[in-house]
Amino acid sequence: MSNPKGAQTLSPSRASITLNKLRTFFSKPYNVILLLMGIVFTVTTIAPIVAIVKDTFAIHAGTIDAHLTGKVSGYTLVNYVDLFTSRMAKTNLWTPLLNTVYLAVGTCLVSIIYGGLFAFLVTRTNLAWRKYLSGIFIFPYIMPQ
Image (cartoon, rainbow, N blue to C red; front, side, top):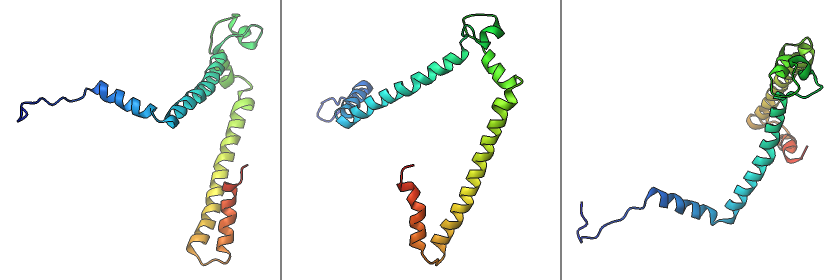
């Protein structure tokens, strides 16, 4: 199709559209601050986690992993094998993990039952002191721990 007056219409390229969007995004100071804070928080959070996980695979001289592998340096899975399968695994890992699961499930069930009962009473009945009870249950959300 040609233009009736003979003029050509130019369509912008994808690169120029993307560049224009980036310029618009970075022209707002709060977007620049948001990006910089996101980078800082990512680096200060992810870098220590990666270092800790890397350290769990490393063999350290004079430790049990060096004794079990017979090496003084390098990387191994012996720490994880020891964690999950040793004689102390039941005492050090599985029993506390099971207790944590019991506590989490029990806490959720009690909270849902207790909160659901009071939510029903406050919203669906003509309970005396409804506003007072509603305020009491909102209070923990307002106050910091």
